[in-house]
Amino acid sequence: MIKNTISITDVLDRYAGVTIPGAKTTRKSFNISCPYHNDRNPSFTVYTETNTFFCWSGCCNGRSGDVIDVVKLSRKVNTKEAVKILIYDYELKRPGNKQAKEWQKKRANRRQTAALQ
Image 1 (cartoon, rainbow, N blue to C red):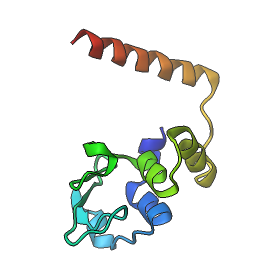
Image 2: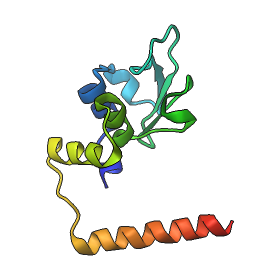
Image 3: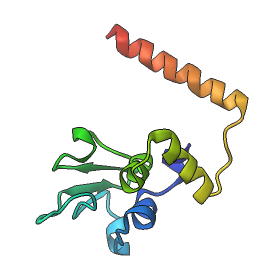
């Protein structure tokens, strides 16, 4: 829910201090200088359609990141704290018990499927 509700460009602006010109946000992807290390050439690709990013210089241990990862990197907190920060700052509702249980079942099914492959 959080990953799809909040814009990656908004989170980068709010937590990493990256101001992105409006023209760029209409593109499927664009490159900027990475806010997490010194960059001579823009190595941080933002994918607006999937609400993710990828740093070609190795931030996030070589995997893509999302709005939660932006908060984790910017505030130096764990995933649980990053989610709490986003819920509070964006005034999102916490999932109810029924919805949380559905998400847990889906996550367990994905893990089980991945283990079988």
